[in-house]
Amino acid sequence: MLNLLRRYSVLFTTGTLLLLSAALLVTNTRTSRRIDPLGVVFLEIITPISHLLSSVSGTMSNTWRTYVDLVGVRQEREWLRRRVRELENQVERAGTLETQNARLQALLDLREGMPGQSVAARITGVDASGLFRTATVNKGESDGVQKGMAVVSPGGVVGRVVSTSPNAARVLLLEDPSSGVDVLVQRSRARGIVEGSLNGGCQLKYVKHREDLRVGDLVATSGLDGIFPKGVLVGTVSRLSREEGGLFQTAQVEPAVDFNKLEEVMVVEAPENEVPPEASQNGPATHAPSGG
Amino acid sequence: MRSLLIFAMAGVLAVVVQTTLVQRLGFLPAAPDLIVTLCVYLGLHYHTAAGALGAFLLGYLLDTFSGAVPGLYCLTMTLVFGMVYLVSKRLWMENPMSNIAAVALGSAVKIVTVVLYFAIVATRSVNWWFVLRTLMLEALLALLCAPAVFAALDSYLPRSARQHAAE
Image (cartoon, rainbow over the protein chains, first blue to last red):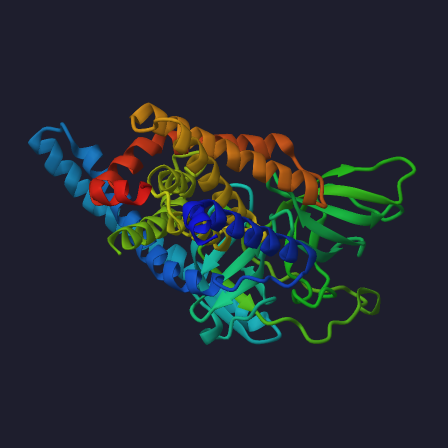
C-alpha cells in the first residue's frame, strides 16, 4: 500500500488538491462570505512589492521615453532639446503637482461630505485576470478599512471592499459583473440597481416600466443598500432598452468614474440609517463635483 | 529549497507583472498569463507532490489577485499541472517547440475550465465573445512569453535538481 502511494504520489496529491480546490470553489460559490484562508497572507506579501514596482516602472517608462526621443539628434539640437525638455519637465511637474493637488483637494472635500469614518487610499494594482474588475489599495485593517466598506472617488462610486489584510485591501469595482448598487435616478427619483457587466460598463436594471427614464439622466446611490452613502454619483444613462409588455426597463449606464485613470480613492464606512427616497422631498445632493 | 525560493519569487513576480506592470506600460491588450506558464513548467520538470502543491499555490495566488471566486484558479492550475504531468510522462517534451505546445495545452485547459465555470455557475448573462477574446489573448501572450520564462527558470534552476525532481 505504501509502495503504491509512493509510486503514484503525484497523482494522489494532484487528486487531493483538485478535490480541495473544488470544495473551496463550491463553498465560495454557495455562500456570500468569502472563504479565503491564504488570501490575507498573499495580499500582505505582494502589495508592497506591487506598490514599489508601480513607482519604479513609472520612472523607467519616463526615462525610456526621454532616451528614445533624444537618440540620433545632433549635439546642438540635443542641447537645445534637453533645455526644452528640462523646461517642459518643470512645467509638466508643475502641472502634475497641480493636478495631484486638485485631486487630493477633491478627495478632502469628499471626505468632509461623508457621514462616517473614511480613509484615503492609493490604488496599487488591478485585477490579475482580464475577466474581472478588482483593484488593490494600500490601506488595510490597521487603517480602519473593513470588508464591505464603500469605495468612492471625487468622480463617484468606485466599488466596495471585498477582502482585507492588515495593510492592504481588495476592491470589487462597480463595473465587475458581480457588483450591484442600489440607485436612484436624480431627475425622476426612479429606483433601480446598477450592475457591472463582463464587457465593461454598467447596466441599470429593475426600473419599473412606468417610471420616466431618459438618456442623460444622472444616477446616484440611494443609500438603501447599507454600503454606499446616499447621493454619490454612479453614472449617466447612455442608452435605454424598453421591452414591450415587460415589468422593468433596462438602461446602459456610463460610469462617472474612469476606472483606468483612478489613482486615489476614499474608503468610506457604511451609512447607519439612511432616509428612504420617498421620505426625502428634494432628493439627495450628488457628491460629485468633478470628473473621474 | 532553492527551487522553492525561485518558484515563490517567480510567482510573486508573475502576479506583480500581471497586476501592475502590464497596466502601467499600457501597450498590451491583455496581461500574459504567466502563472499558467509557471504551472506548465512545474508539470514538465517537477514530477513530485511538491510540484502539484506549487501549482495549487500559484492558482491560489491568482485567485487572491483576481475577482474570481476563491478556488477557481486553484482548480484550474492544479488541472493544468496534472494534464501537463500526464502528457510529459508519455511523450518526450524536452525541446523548445514541445515546451510551447505544453503551454498551449495548459492554456487550453485553463480556457475550458473557466468557460465551463461560467456556463455552469454564472447567474448573470455572460458575454461569451468578451470572455473568449480575453482568454485567447492571455493565452497567446503566454505562448509568446513562454520561451523567455522557461529560459529564465532553466538558468536559475540547476538541471540536476530538475532531473532529480522528474525522477
